[in-house]
Image 1 (cartoon, protein in one colour):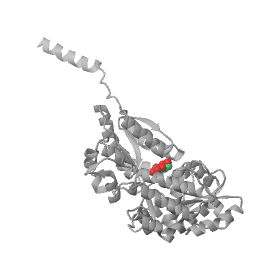
Image 2: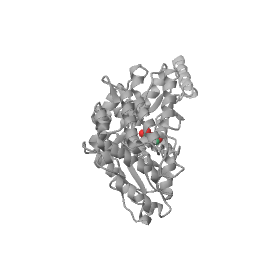
Image 3: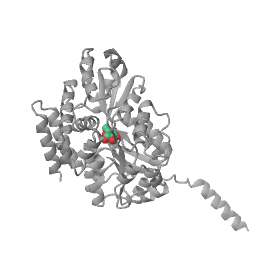
Length: 410
Ligand code: GAL
């Protein structure tokens, strides 16, 4: 009996003295391109939620979508993959899936019932061959006009309804010493502007056709040439400092009233929010025309060798898709949650306009990253940027180059 008592005492003592090793936090290296003030505040929501759940978020932010995607793909193909990396919703991840570099997310998707809560277009964009390969995190409207309310009042103008209104507003803003259109002269931004004019001036049907197998017929339509001419005229509303400008520096020009408006995705709202400005108060927003170009972001999970790595991926997938994280992240990001079962709480007047458009299939236009390959979009960006910055290039020459670039992309 004495022996048993001492053994029990020994065991009890051992239990108290051996510190219970806290499980090592699950380290996750994440490559993304959210480097502006608003974007950094938004991605911090993901990082904090992951760390709180027992992870350790290692942030590898790389400025610029093209640069971040290239860096992540090189790391994966080179055999030194991050735990997770960002893409736009759509075709950008296709090559990695085809070459079997990505883990599927089926376990998280079934545990989280993703099929029941994702809009059809996003569900389709997140799956390949019946498996989930992308974790979608938001929906961004891409063809907004954001404007400074005070500047517009000073110039005696109101929210533009057509691109002709935008062009007519230019001289009125200039007369008040205000730069009419803040723009970042980077090729992806030039293309965002072109696509906004295509959707608003050319119309939703023409937009869909240009990025379809029937593209050549659409490009030959006189309306497409008219879109090109409207787009070129916008150059006259921009300031000489626009070449190379970052999109968020253009947003800052509208925030400070240096410029009247900016055409950009609603990630710009994250900058207004970070500057403590409110939609409908210091700034306004409008989508020109009926087409609402829906973009967004996803994360992919490269195949990893270690059990810790795959455990980190499973935790990321669970945490980032949870309703509470979805709402908190999208509030900061300026996007709307990708889950249909969460109320985008406290939606401002711009988000409400976006949600109305999202409810009308006729208005929904998938962004080009859903419709064409990154290579084709890159080739078209080059054609658009050259046209915007070459005064002598005619709309007819642009139309021919655009058609040739589509044809060359096969
Ligand atoms: C987009 C992305 C947005 C936004 C923007 C500018 O491609 O969907 O989340 O951050 O780039 O960086």
